[in-house]
Image (cartoon, rainbow, N blue to C red; front, side, top):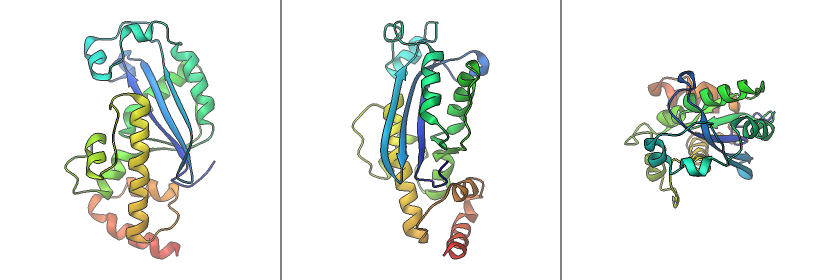
Length: 209
């Protein structure tokens, strides 16, 4: 397992609703795998939740019941995705949402993962406290990252989260002169109070030089 923050799997789910505890299922998974800040692989699949999705979800995601009726089962797709993850660390924007669905869908097929799960939303709140808000689309605009697709499709959101994540790592590296940002630094940063972040990163930089 790599311990660097620029080598992991960035993922996004589209789902039938907000909570697997309420019976909601995944309907699409998209993911990007990066090594040393470079994209080396992608994963995308629709999956049939074996139920009708609501008009709201169809409108929100652009994924229709007709698109899902011949899609592979959730179980089949998630088995492939577990293989794709391997032992990598994971990242999502608003990771608590995606982690709930990942855990729920993998538990159905008795699979799991060994990597840590990080959240670009939590980190962005600490690195970009002056952003208008910390939604993915807003941060993409805030950082002037080129955006030419449709949000709320899993692979596109994963691609955009990847670009945001690399921008975050680059900004931390440049501002605090931290050449190699480790997963342990991201873990600590995610738990640091916003006002204490500059001091924490300065101290980290001094101690790691």
